[in-house]
Image 1 (cartoon, rainbow, N blue to C red):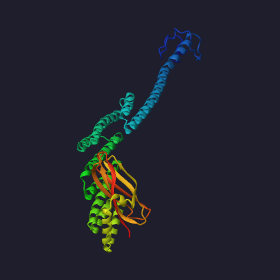
Image 2 (tube, rainbow, N blue to C red):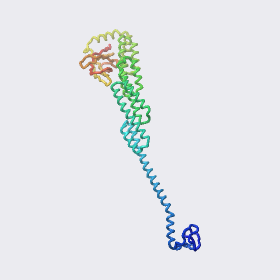
Image 3 (cartoon, one colour):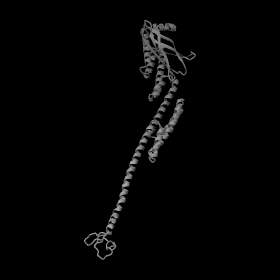
Image 4 (tube, rainbow, N blue to C red):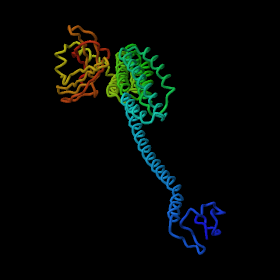
Length: 398
């Protein structure tokens, strides 16, 4: 017969298998010499042995399936969290670039809760916290600028630049831009405060050169004031030389002013006036011109207005302590007039004369019925004032 466990052929009287040691006498079923399995408890043992044989494979397979599923779920979950954190990070950076540091910090805090070990988030939060503190200090600098304490504001700005220098990246760019703007405001403010002390074209031209490197709205406004002062000083100096019949000097002064106030209508009109006066002087007409001017100077304002009429006269103050004076003059007589000059007074609220000024009308010659313009910029208005036309002078063409 054969062993029911390992299948080795054994003797019929053997109690145990010499190969595997199985008990041969305690079983009802056995394999006979022809290999036929007899019914009995041996069949049940064979089934049990088969189950035992597959049992070690079932547990590892189940664990492998659970492990793979767990890894997949974890990967999917972590991927979603990463995407959420990156989206929050981008949103926080957008708020920071717009200068809304409080909202940016709030966004980053929520991202750090999701990814505490993501160091980029903490770095961004640190940078934004510093930027927020610097923003508060910049507000204090703005107050100093507003109070015209430019030296203190400049020192404070130097200190803030040193703090910002250690920072880098797009989150700090709005703050760096604001530092540049504050620096521009200080430079423009200092120049504006010095305008009262600048009395020559050369001094004003140097400030104009500084402002040319400051492309800002404030810089352009002060630049316009400087140009107006250059025109005013040039006109005054040229008129003084013209009054002394120093025509070459008057032309030189006017040309120098035109180098800065390019194509200014007031200076161009003044230059034409100087050249015309010189030409008439050279043609031996000086005597007639002087007599006409002397006669005109002796007439009162009412008689002078019989030839010319003021129209559209107005004056407008600006925020920089200046005032633009404009108007038109109409020729109401039948002959042409030229070399027209308008004189005006600056009056206080009590009608006291604070200052006087004059300006040249352009074009130089005015035909019957025609109108010409005049304008002047008066600097140094620091109280409520009014302007009145005191007088006009002109030459009547023969």
